[in-house]
Structures are given as C-alpha cells and as structure tokens.
Figure 1 (tube, rainbow, N blue to C red):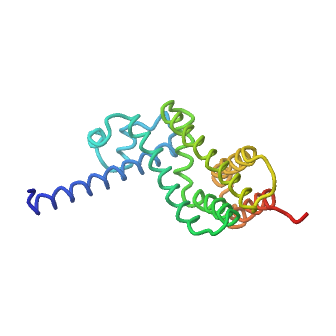
Figure 2 (spheres, rainbow, N blue to C red; figure 1 turned 90 degrees about the vertical axis):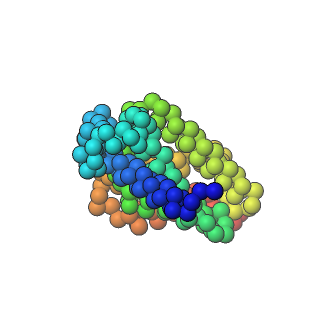
Figure 3 (tube, rainbow, N blue to C red; figure 1 turned 90 degrees about the horizontal axis):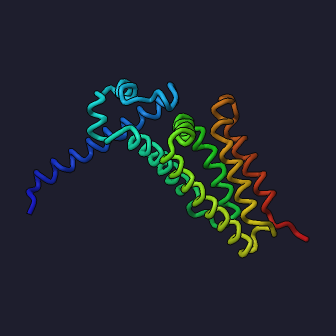
Amino acid sequence: MQPENERSDQGRRSFIEAARRAQIVDAAIETIVELGYAKASFAQIARRAGVSAGLISYHFANREELINQVMITVHESMDADLTTKTEGSGSYAVSLRRLIEGYVHYCAAHPKELIAISRIAANATEAREWADGQRDATLDELEDMFREGQQAGEYRDFAPRVMALTLMAALEAVPRELFERPDTEVAAYATELADVFDHATRKTAP
C-alpha cells in the first residue's frame, strides 16, 4: 500500500507538471502568433515561457509533439465551452443559436489561440490531418443535428449536408474577421449570424 505522503507528493508533481505543460503551450501560441509557425522554435518558445529549452524537451519529445498539443488543447477548450453553452437548450433551434453565438464569443475571447491553430494547420502535415479529421466529425454532427431537427418538425425541408457545409464555412470565417477587424461589435455579429441560420432553417407556416 502506497504511503499517504508519497501519494500526496506524486499528486503535487503531477499538478506542477500539468501547469508547466500548460505554460509551455500558452507560450507556443504566443510565439506562433508573434513570429509565425516557421520561426516558433523551442528557443523562442522558451524565452516567452521564461524557462529553458531543455525543460521544454523534458515535457515534449520534439517540436511536432508540442505543436500537436497546441491543436488538441485549443480544440478541447472550445468543445468544453460550447458544450456548456448548448446544454439544456430544449430545442434544436435554441441549440443552434447558442452554438453559433457561443462560437463567435469564444473566438473573440481567444483570438490568439484560433490564429495559432490556423497557422499550424496551414504548415504542419500531421496537425493538419488531425484538424481535418476534427472538421469532418463536426460536419457530420452538424448534419445529424439538422436532420434530427427536421424529423422533430422544427426545421423546414432542406439538404442537411448543404446546410452543415454552409454553417461550417460561416463559422470558419469568424476568427479572421475578428482578428482583422478588432473593432467589430462581437455581440451584434454573433446575433446577426445566428439570425441568418435561424431564418435559413426555420419551418414557416404554409
């Protein structure tokens, strides 16, 4: 049986290591946004994290592993945020609105993270393939949501795949729009975009 103080020490070490990894991931995001993907070396990331390049190597075997962790961390953060925002929606229409508005607000609150993963996806083959897989899964989920909404009688008759592709394209345009136009009124943008798809999917009276 493991002594209590040993388990406690291991818990503290795990917490410290997790915090250090998160610090390095944050620094990697900052570096990619500031210098670009190609120049985001361990040395540059270490400088922004306030640690040695050797410490980064302790937590991440190589640059590719760190870059992949950036992608995973940002996607997990976004998924958790949107799941919280859409829980208990009560209807497909409300869920769709909360999803769209929540995504816009998430992008506004995390501009650097979204720019970083877009640059990673444009340059790193393994990360891009992983991101493509995530995108395909999201498209399937959106298509299922639209189909189920039709079956529930909430949505009008349309091609669920086409609507999912259209929504995906609109969402993918959000990070760059907010990054290039920092004065954008985020709440108004979120509401307007949600309104567009509410009108596009709504089942109107004959």
